[in-house]
Image 1: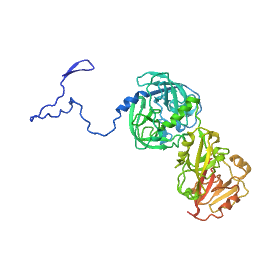
Image 2: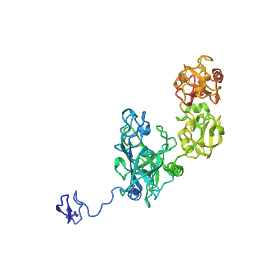
Image 3: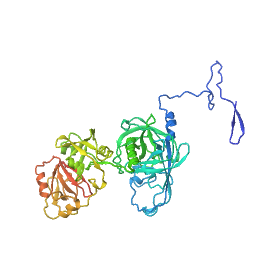
Image 4: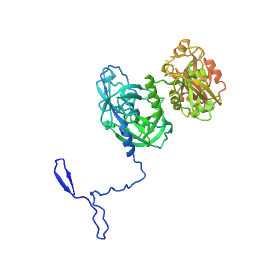
Length: 509
């Protein structure tokens, strides 16, 4: 018999459960509610057991608490970067997680933000105290505290932080600290097991597991085009941000960052920043305190190439990134890349969709030489490009001023595309940043095909196929040979800003 002490320290005598012999001498199973003397064998075998992994890597995972002081800041509508659970303004959005008690600025987005707290997760990458986490976990923090698994607390210094990749590097004073190993990012494949350790809702050292659902995912809701996210079904909630995503060897394959949610909570779709992208940022933050990215100097259609556009350009398929603008003086222009080119490869890596290109270019340092493969006029060509440093002000395709109403001179009636066009004035061209031989204003849209393509008065046609047009008469000359049912490609500067190729097939209506 054994003695158990209750909370009230009263001794209770309980018998040890033993198997009672049956009349035929065979030991019978213990009664329900009685413990067996020997642990039972698992009824299910072949399932993964993560206990050893967690025991070995858990001590290197830390909890992060930040304190935000009152600050005066005028804020407009929240961007996806600011979204947090309970934010119902945008349904089904990538959400980044702050902890309970985090407070946004006062009503209307104006005035000082009340003092608040946020929480997240991080992990040690060096024995002397370098810690990786998310930028949004420590953004705007006045004080950052790091708590180890043994509950020892440190005040951390922010070495550097990069909003574009959502990676931050912290430093605490320590020696001989436990460290996580990093994996080969290119080896991550859909279907493999993945494990997350973090502090959801402040519950530190919580473990969840699942599989990698996809790799190379893009985030259309935030300025993170340089991050090819790892998608998983690992349960991630507020407080998990910045924690490690691990493979079955206990190596870090990513940093848990966001979920895609309609409610603000986990719904089976989680996203992590690939560890190779994060470590590239870490090295630059250590060396210079900032991150430099390569720039090609092109704007392409983020929605990808449609079958109609592929037909209009004579492409064999819809793969690649269709160039709609080239920044003057950029590496792309110097190398000979033009609007209408379709980028199909970068340094030998196939570009299947537009979102494949920015991470390849942006994660290279300025001055890197790249070979860009494009499809032009029925055949593949290659261009050698030396990347410049990313400059947001020089990125093509940013919002452009509206041209206003076209001038009264040089107008035409509706053409085969159902477009009535007019010449632009010199003032309108200057406003749009066009030279004297660029641009034809759309005055009316009468054709069904043109309307369905999204064209409207105020848009400006820059090219027909690869040929620039600078007047209504020049546009009409290019369209004379177009027959009903033939697809025409127009490069259009939208009235809302930015350029795109539009495929129109007259007569389909």
